[in-house]
Image (cartoon, rainbow, N blue to C red; front, side):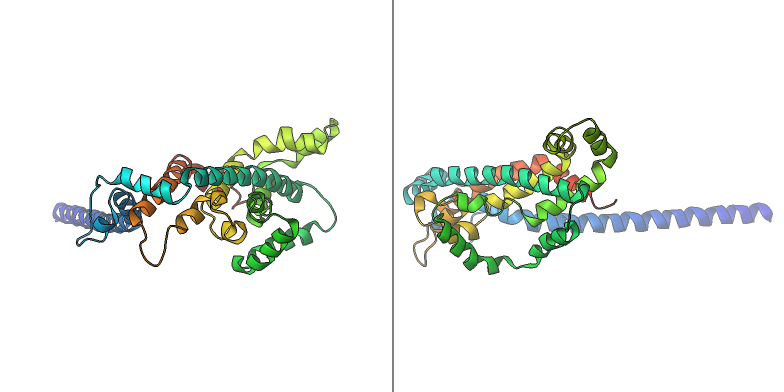
Length: 294
């Protein structure tokens, strides 16, 4: 009897283990299915953008629409370069994005280091003020931005696109959080005791330790500047000075829009961002979460 009871108990445990594995495999399969469906939904617009970039306007609006690549890419490129100074606009976008990234990294790292590791009067009040600017909706800055740029004589000049946002609240907050966790105060105090000046401490000690956060902030800033549409719309006036998003928008009209050329320009503008994100996605996630836990 004892032997039979032991066999029954063992068999029940085996059946229970099989049911648990079956339930786990099913739930895992369902989770993967949802992830796959979400990935397809997110990637579908990019796929069709690249497909439509190789088709003419007539083919794009045919029924059913084209699902594979065509042969009109060169024709679309010719139309694109005839209607707008595409390569010049691309160059301006690159110039503005690089300038915005460099200045943002410089000023935000300085401010973040100061708020994290230096003591000065009204520090907490000023930091709260900086964070408070993040509560202001961006559209409320449109008219004040235009008035200030007009007063400075910067209308239709590219410095109006990268200088005003060189010390953004998000960048200062990210640098401050990372500095407070990644840079020991003892290291800064030891450098001061050795006679090192504040800028030398920042340049030789703080900046190298901020590389992970700098990479994240640089990536976010570059992508945001590259995709910026509202800023150029406010201050740019001549087509030769447009950045790429505004130039591509100028291709659209109520009638006779060359959608093939527009998709070609959009695809070319998207390729650098896809490549940049593909090689830097881990850096982006790691940098954004580095200062989350102290």
